[in-house]
Every structure is written in C-alpha cells, then in structure tokens.
Length: 237
Image (cartoon, rainbow, N blue to C red; front, side, top):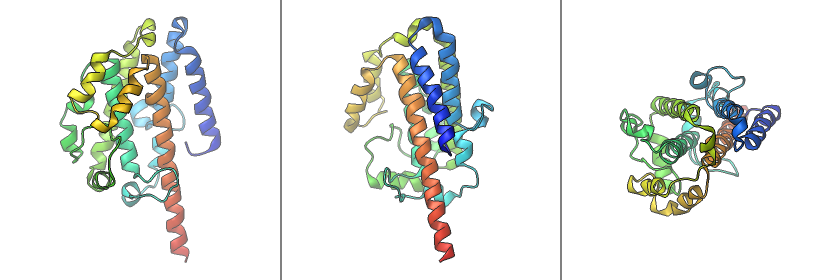
C-alpha cells in the first residue's frame, strides 16, 4: 500500500485471518476477511469499494513507460510492474482454480493468452531475463488488467462456496500433478509444486492469494515511486 498506516491496517486484518481461518466456528468471519484482504489489493472495480485499494493507488497517474520498464532500478526486484501484475494473477489463478477448486483456470477461457499478446501460460517463476523483457514489452495492458479482474472475481466465488471444514483439507496430489501435465509450471519450478503440496486450502488463501499478492503490489508501488523520483530528478537537472 502507499503508506505505513495502510500497510499496517492490512497486516492487522491478515493476522485476524490467520487466527480464524482454521476455526470452523469462525468460518464466516474468515471468509469476510479473505474477501477484504484480497479485495484491497485489487482495484475497487474488481471488489467494490472497501477503502484504499492497492491497484487504484498504483494506477493513479502512472505512464505506460513506467509500467513496462525493465529492468527496474530497485534493490529487491528487477522485474517490471506488468510482470508483477501478470505473475500474481497467474499464481492466484492456478492455486485457486486448480489446487483449491479442482476446476479449470481462468486463463483457459476467453483466449486470455492470445488477448494478452503473450506466449507464456505458466506461473512466471524461473523466467530468464530475455523472457521477462519480452513479456514486459509485448503484453497488452488492458487485457492484463481485465484478466486480473476475472481471476479476482473467480477467487471470490470459490471462497464463498467453501464449507467450514474444507479450509483444513490438504491439497490433492492429483491436482499438483496437473500443474505439470497442463504446463502451468516450468520444470525448473518443481520446488514451488513441492511447497504448495504441503499446504492446506487455508494455507493457500493465506499465501499466495492474500500475502503474496500484497507483497508484489507493494513492490509495484515502490517501483512506480522510484522511477517517478528518478525521472523528476532528471528533468530538474
């Protein structure tokens, strides 16, 4: 989020979620907290007005050059803003629709890969610099944002459909295997499949659907602010 108070407020909600998500008697509260913490990372267009939305902050007066800039001048990431947005959408799509719901990912509908003008259908982990550069320069931003909205809304449908006991369930091994059979993960990303295989459904809502998205959205906002400051300094000089 854009300032310390907003980040602290989000983290407080996430701590509440962590405490309640495995308690069947607090199921309704946990669902509400998932919808809130997930929705605040997206735009108000996706989730409805919940307060100060991370994506609304990010896209306030941002230029396409800043969104596509790669590599970025930050110490904790080299990747472009559009890469980060695509990556968190892909991870949420895969984990929620395949690992949690056992259905089909959003990417498989409506020709999303073609609409986004990219050739990548995996999670984005372990991409090389050439691939990241290609995606950063070629991805259709309008379609990327529409895909994110579709993923976010589908996640909200899934969480509302869960029964209290389901948060405790482990991820089925057959669903992990689908990640490779359907090329959602690169061979180099076996570590990620192993990590997810040890999670419960609750664990996937805590990380990646909420916390992972939060971390990457904050990176996007920091990238934007850093490049804007650098550009302003250049113009003054």
